[in-house]
Image (tube, rainbow, N blue to C red; front, top):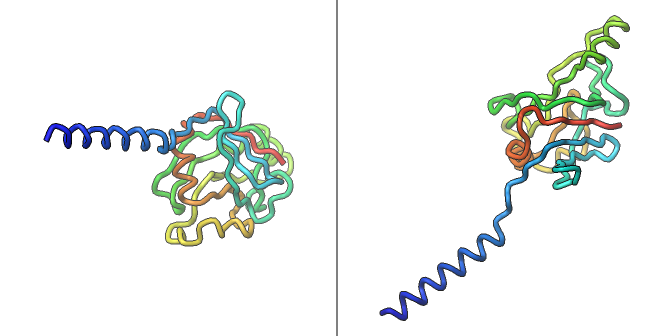
Length: 167
């Protein structure tokens, strides 16, 4: 009896060791960089890339967003400033666009800079599309990832995390 208990305990300890080695550690990013040309979003920690995601952008992604309705993804330095677990997409994290500079440029051109730019998952009810969404840039100017990926990003970044969107 004692041998079986010890053998059972050894198996439990081994299973715990194996799980500890294979369970991914949660990501903690202190900065996000989006490279529009490469269609990637990078999570960084202390200056090092810890995870890269492929993304879809606005339907007309080349060039910086200059006005509402142009279907461009902004370029520049912003902040991930709030999140919505109940948006029209699976989850969304708001980007602080437009900046004061964006508003001034739009005002100079007599247009609205727009707003409501997010990093988000797929539209509700379309999770089945998965990574296939990346076949075409389809957002109104946002940065889209799969639902599983937005879950990871959601946990990895805090409100107030800087995001830089590069051409």
